[in-house]
Image 1 (spheres, rainbow, N blue to C red):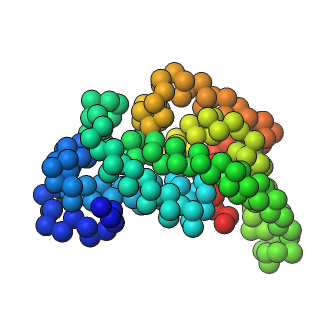
Image 2 (image 1 turned 180 degrees about the horizontal axis):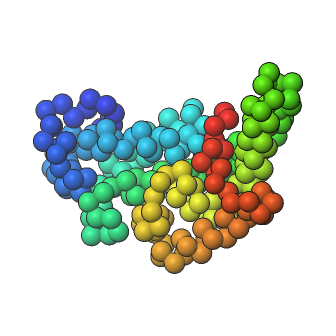
Length: 210
């Protein structure tokens, strides 16, 4: 079955259903599963593109929804957030991203090597200073992300770039919430160290440079 926009013609009923209900119904009516693509593909793509770039993200997102469709009989709404399938989808996407660890590391390292701007790159001195600082922060964060253990990076980026809660992240990765908290604490500590003790709030901006 091809998963993509417009596949679920005649399935308007799915628009009003919870994710769990759509998945359950798709076991007998496969075409309604496309409602999940319509609801969540943009969010999954944003998260994946930040980690791997747009070109690879297109393929990963397509594979994410194909895998989800194939595994829909195993979806358990009693787990974690129940009726919301987004953590489940992000978990599948993160697992697929793991096949591209080298590409992700190369991406972050390339971002870390981007030269810092100088005052001559911007006509207004104040704006130039802001841009130099922002670029420097992105470089340091990118280098720190590349150096993180994969399991810590997954937790950090599901929270920061996937906008998942700790509980949703735990569901996505199939680990206890306590483990999420522990890995997130360690990852944030590494980022603070990379920023000279500053709070790594700029993490959400590190992907602005492509």
